[in-house]
Amino acid sequence: MAESDFESLGELLDAVDSDFGEPPRYRVLLHNDHYTTMEFVIEILTGIFHHAPARAEQIMMMVHRQGVGCCGEYDREIAESKVAAVTRRAAEAGFPLRCTMEKV
Image 1 (cartoon, rainbow, N blue to C red):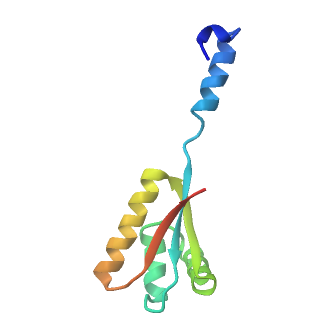
Image 2: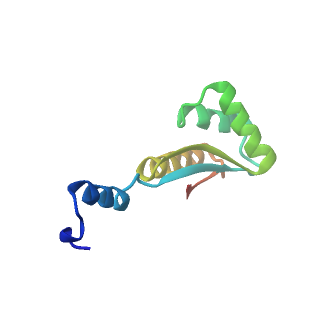
Image 3: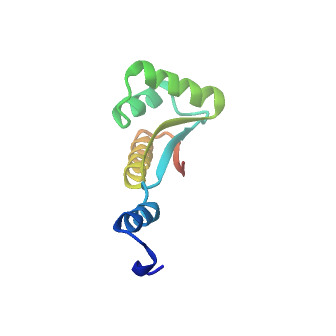
């Protein structure tokens, strides 16, 4: 569409807004395994994701019981940095904890 296709500046701005809406969000997920301790998962949830201890325990139990749990929703760059931080810290501690992200 050319600018001349719009009858007013408002229509043009509405079209631009629809083209450049909110950036996509990503869920950061922890996946259950048989080796990573519950205490370490809570440490990850409080340290990296800044959850209160009670909320961290709820998420940890979801991971334990359902196989996966959502740590939060973030912009892409933040989600990527959280996944990298979890992966690095788990490797340093000798745990195979898997952390992924998915588009909301």
